[in-house]
Length: 541
Image 1 (cartoon, rainbow, N blue to C red):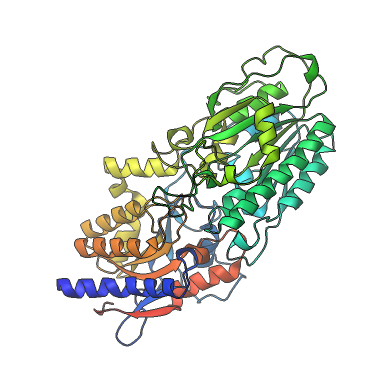
Image 2 (cartoon, rainbow, N blue to C red):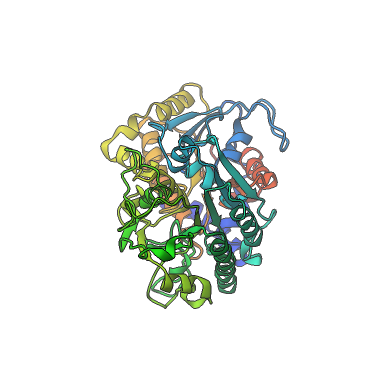
């Protein structure tokens, strides 16, 4: 392929994305773009017996699309008969999926907070809206589907068919608060864990007014919960899983819709009946998310298991009393800490309830990013890592780090599942599809993992390799999707293997709220080629 032809083919896809930008579309909800041949036929569609590597990590948003592609029994939308795809997922998305897993979980994380409480015979109730159901469940229980004995979950359904929560910044915080208060009034629950999702979810938009309203909504509900904790004599711990809108602007003034590296607050407000007779709690000034579970266990008088390497944040608690406390852990999702006011929407919003707690009760700052949550140094936190470490009470090496290490030491290129997919596709004359997020650093994956797969395909001499790219702007600069597609095209051309044939916003493919109409759109783009057609400058099979 001549250089000018390479540039022309690349620019056609990129120009299609830019045209969508001009029409008001954004990366995350970008309508599918499909590469076609001169006759208008979609290139690189999923056909019967093809091999697919879904290289995303994290997994909870990948389950529905994987079900649509592989499940034998499926009722949510019409599918092509006898597609019979051979699918490899990067990690375990769900144990019930009919797939091969390249990097399966090495071992179960034992003795998480929920499991320890269950063994102690203490009822535990977890409360969140469905946007964060998997975080207080699967992730907080150590990436474990199991609900332990005496563990109860109350999930408030999030709003449906919402393309952006910026139009609904209060979300279901009021309903979640009502459920929390109901359980606070019920003395049979010694431990309650709850999540208010607004700041994180709305913080991924560029609507400043909506973000400020989300922060205010969380602060209002915080105030209502604190009133009830005081009335019921409940000890409340307030913290977060990671930061977001406390650093809402990049240095150049553009909006940062992603997560941050900042610490998160930790507040202990003890409203138990005997607290006035004792010296106030003292907390360590700095801790990390893995210290939350040991702190809760110490407050409840339960021995910390050996697996929990985190340390209690309490500096003066051991032996101080024998009182049986009730404890509420309230997670203000995405509420980070940063002293600078510039671009800090937490400080800009009116938050009297949080401010009063912060100034009146013992508090600490917790590390919630990088190595403290099992991720590479100097990387931002995320909800998966945050809730995992809050529940595990120890540092847990995340899948991303293991995969990066495998690339570095070369074992990635000897991975049995990858070799099975690539060698089988070659032997059986079937197409190989690489499907996943295209981003420098998304919690769902990275472009570096795609590039490693392309290098392996090149080494094995594969020809029919097709890239299906999911884009989404969280934490990226505006209109970064076009930049990433250009990078992928360039890598394909340098290696002389693969071509981008599908581009769509992650909104369609990575749903976790049973919005099957979205997943249907992604499915039909991948299988039938439905979307905006972009003609290839070179015909390929």
